[in-house]
Amino acid sequence: MLPAAETAALQLTDAIIGYPGSLSEDTRQTLKANFSDAEIVEMALGVGLFLGMSKVLINLGLEPEDMPVTVMPTPGSQ
Image (tube, rainbow, N blue to C red; front, side):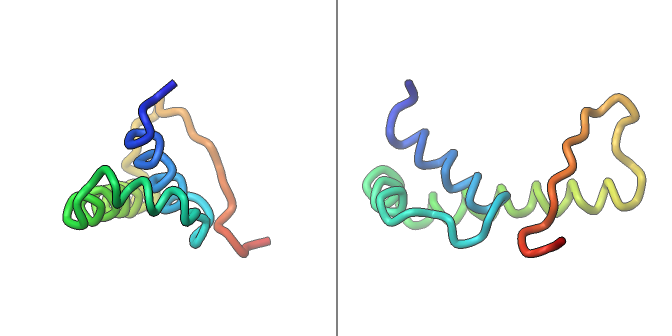
């Protein structure tokens, strides 16, 4: 089992990549108890930049041919 701080960081990542607004108040409190505001912002921006850049590379057809792909619908799409 991972420490609470690491679990909260992963839950933050899941909330950014997955369904927006899914970060629970408990996770927010755990993040605030274990990380500074600057660290939380840095994690969130890092995940957002990696997610955005991966979408750009895929749309330009620049992903590696042997890269495993999981297709996930955008929240709210059909």
